[in-house]
Amino acid sequence: MTTTARVVLDLDHPRPNTPFIKIDGVDFTMLEAHLLPPLKSHRMLSYSRRLDVLVTKDTLTDEDQAELEGLPEKMCRLVLQAPDEVHAKLNDEQRMAIVSSFLRPEKG
Image (cartoon, rainbow, N blue to C red; front, side, top):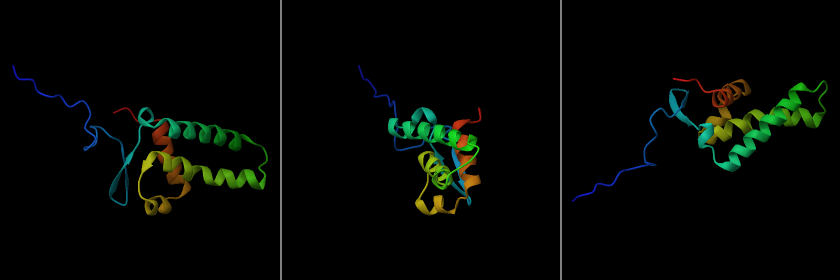
């Protein structure tokens, strides 16, 4: 009797339906929430909570403003697998669009 090995996970190839973000004509992988490693997941949750707190404040201190300005890049880097030079080209609106796509993926 011959048994054939069954591949249960192929790390050499992207999973079918892997979400991509197209930037300057190049596809970059966006992680999915259920595949985010625990530490990254914890960071994303912390950043999201902090973002909510800061955007609902009536008045921002200089420190709050600096922190708020840095959150879109931090959050985007957690979910978009792209080189530093790609991340550096993005503006905050693009970063938040990527983060929103991560937080609320389209059902396809």
